[in-house]
Length: 358
Image 1: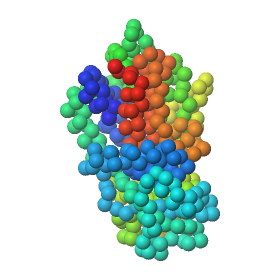
Image 2: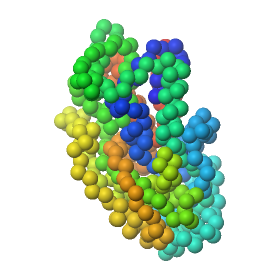
Image 3: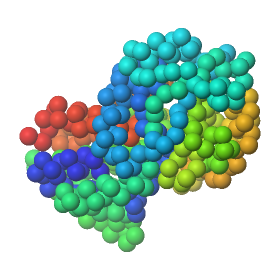
Image 4: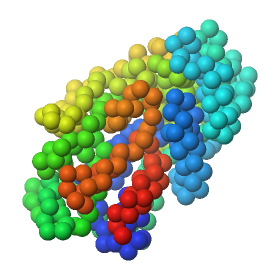
């Protein structure tokens, strides 16, 4: 949506094709709703710095969609942690992120034998529904033509441009549109378009994930907790639902699979639709209670299920670079994917640096 607006404001005629019936109803909604400020990536300085740069810009541009009315705490877990308290403090100093000892009200809630230190930081959450509504109005103002419930089946070269085959999911009718450039921003479905178009797949890792939505005890109503860095958990305000999200590094991913060039493509959305879901909430809560016993008072409401897609290289350092493949397989066909909401700025810069639309 952000890219479409940017292109339209630059004077281009833009069509935005969306498979779902409403924008931001899948991966942009079914996540932690965290507006990153760098803290989450002590093993990837570049990702942390990009988040630090994007954070104030995102908060300024989308302030009406941001929830800053809570205190955020990062807890350093042990003995399984990959980062010590000393290393975390040094990291925060390097990226210029504020980090202070957490107040005693939080310190008294933790298990000291499993938590080395507690820090108070600055980090927010976003309301995906408010963000969607704002972007819809901005797209209308920019005269972007939006088509909902339409699937891009394939793309092929025609002359100096591209012919895009579309299928209306409600009527099953097909039609075609011509474009000088096509940006494939379909996240977990990026390789669907490539496979259908006879283009080499992009290496991607997919996870079937569960994000639990819970009611937290009063002591945590205005707080967000992240234990790191290792097989730990996060409890974050989830503004769209008025609850908290509860995720766990070990239990949120239920299983995973890879897209590899040369392999037979496995449709991530088909797997999602056919998946038989059994919640891992009790495992998440039981483990988290060892670090903060008060989390045993959380009341489970429901789960958000989604396919999470990352670049395979992110496995080693938890980095979140954008994927940007210009002219991938066809001239004028570009693949773009980000792993965080503020990656919109990185994508705009990457595209501008290539001078694709000049």
